[in-house]
Length: 193
Image 1: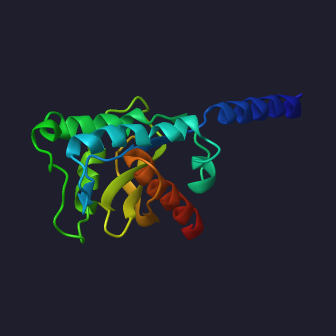
Image 2: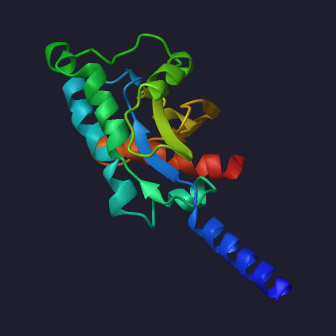
């Protein structure tokens, strides 16, 4: 009888552990720190394009396979986090200043600012791990974009990993042009890890 009781307790402990699954969230791409180089488009044009770049993660999961490319099994995909961050940072400024996100240097890096942005995220999830792309430099003269792949702890907002990846841009339209760079960055990250 004692063995049977231990077996029952063990069974329920295993069952409970199976249901206590940690959150693994993907939050899309955050362009709040991104800069452009050599681009003629206005900042407001980029605001529209940036908002649309996150849609393929939801609409085309076979092409933008974040589970495969980021080596994780995501149980939360919420691309609105990056979109909100861009709007909160730039708001009306991009309508007043057509060059608000332009950069005069090719060596721009937003790495120093990422920790602060992540700390200020308003998230529904309270624990687990998250991955988000941060747009860094979109260089039209080289037809490539750079992104940081950021892994952070949701509870503490502490950045655990931050890797810079580059991808070739291409395609018709501003959104597709830079979405292609992001897609190629995902593929490069998959090969790195």
